[in-house]
Image (cartoon, rainbow, N blue to C red; front, side):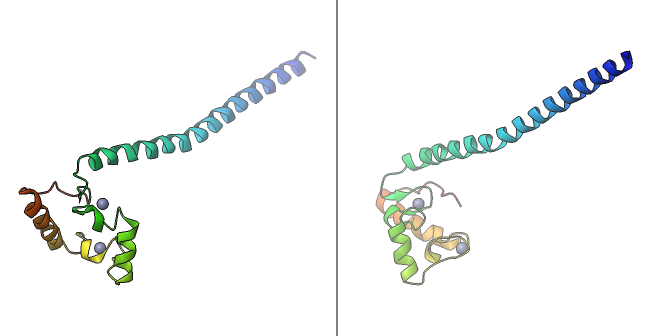
Length: 125
Ligand SMILES: [Zn+2]
Ligand SMILES: [Zn+2]
């Protein structure tokens, strides 16, 4: 009856191998979302360095006065939306959408230059 024991041993080993494969798979699946979370957590910190860089009046990130920045101020966004001044595609005031209206960037930059006598930092798109 030696063959019987050998077969049992073989199936035990197979089960062990399958078990460890399942463990590894389960483990890497868990690592996925955790890794994503770490990446999202790292992002706001990077944005903050840009925000720290500006004067308080000017939103360096978006190239408009902070008070009027529809990307940073929900009040400004509401005011713009109430006027129908809204770019649905880029989720900001149409009058501040440098993607649809690249010429507006210079218009806002001129206001910064008038106040500080220098050009504003290039906004993020
Ligand atoms: Zn902004
Ligand atoms: Zn747009």
